[in-house]
Image (cartoon, rainbow, N blue to C red; front, top):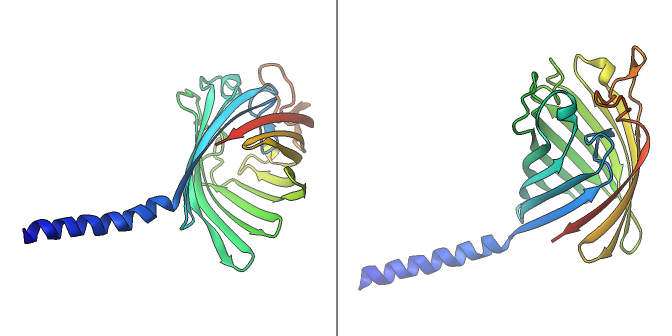
Length: 245
């Protein structure tokens, strides 16, 4: 009987410790669509619409994990087979001193079944500091960058801010610089201004003005689509809708 009571007491004690830990974690989902999937200013969907969705797990300690996916066209345009992108990431985010937040982690961009000559799969480590409305972020590739040969140790640095001029409306200006190591003709600056409005709980519509300073190589834009020759980094407007739950 003493052994049984002890086992029961241990079980109760463990459950009392475990339950608060579970309660401190949260899982969120999102799904949406955009008129053009732009990443760092460059269209990933050949200037056409894309469907997207993801999930995020976060803990009160600051640790988080997530996965996100989007339909794409650029791998197919480059002679590969992948028709979607899968991003897997994890890290830690928390306030390191009053008003200053640090976010560090690792992000793996995966293109299942790509069959490309140079793998587009890319891994980056990143770190970001946020103070007030502003965030400065640095990302560094530990592999080749998105299919560029000999491009390990490429980097991306960006500055963004978030403002809420009225309830439900968020304005996000952004500027960034993509350095493609040993492929200087493909390095460029990108910029954007996004306005997002929550029309109902969890449902957000957005509009973004976006553009880049991509170079021309022998009279052709560095990021021109092999499919139709269109400049994938040209200035444009992107509309989106997302539901988070």
